Image (cartoon, one colour):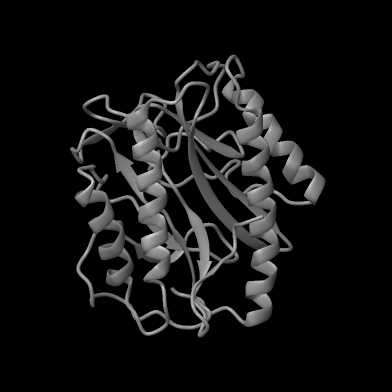
Length: 255
């Protein structure tokens, strides 16, 4: 089911998105060499707590997961694509880190993700993360009323494939609203002009995921949550919550 939000509801979602942006900024600032992933999770928890928000990630338990998710952020390092569980792992110089964060405020959800390097960045990692952001920007630009879900998917996929990167099939964006995952699904590859027509009041999480080795293959780690590239290559993830409006796409998860 796809819920069409009122303008007032979108404004409320903007406030949730602002909290997400603040949490991601705080986590990125805290992510230095020697800092543990659990410490980054504590940083995000403090931001949510200060804002009076809760986490849609914490204790989230989809049917495919063996256990509820135990944290408020996903911390995916190097070959981890998405859904990484914060552990005691301490960040090392050159690590590539993707942080996915959500917030629920006054009943509305925001969801966003960033990828960045810790310490000395590898040139190939910079290109990978930059391309993820470029793909996200392309998807957002295609999210106009009257366009279709396939237009977003095609825009993202074209950027990813043109750069030589893989795309994990079956994982992509989604609707957002009162809950973190609503309809419709937003693939990261597809044919333009296909799929649901975009309307004023729809809100989508648009989230490209790029596999640096160029292959699409991945596997689930032993924890049942973390997805990793099958070839051991690094991965990047970028995401914003975006409202479809008659004036054009409105990004809700910025500071």
